[in-house]
Length: 208
Image (tube, rainbow, N blue to C red; front, side):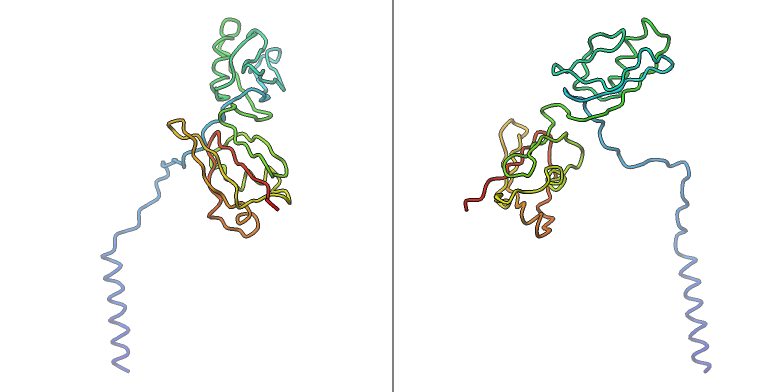
């Protein structure tokens, strides 16, 4: 009994010594408000639809304004301005700068209604997709995201012979082979690669 008691006491002393020698846990810094980097701002393209609000100037605000094929828009007092290639924040700042001639310290907010995006940033899926389409690129867009948008494969699709055609940095095309059937039917997530702006996913037809 004495040996058991001595053993328990020894273990307790070891625990105390280890706790005393271990570094204290770092306290949380309430001033540290950093967050992971957010997704890059959306780039406006022809065919997008915007709403533009000018604070305390309802007569200068516009809703459901389409971006023309030439990438320009017209708003009250600013009849012709390039919108394509800018983020909503940049466009709002540019409109505000133009309105300074007529409004004191204008505050302009641009909100997106529908998204198409610049042509060179669209991702396209063609061939034996149930709904071939062009999709505005967004950060971390994957093959699976594209196929959900395109409503899957047709019954004639040779999904495992699909390819992604990608423009390389030097302008040359890169071909990436994708086994879509394995991804969609068997859950092979190794095939769920990230898309890049301008990618084209081609789904061929089965030979039989």
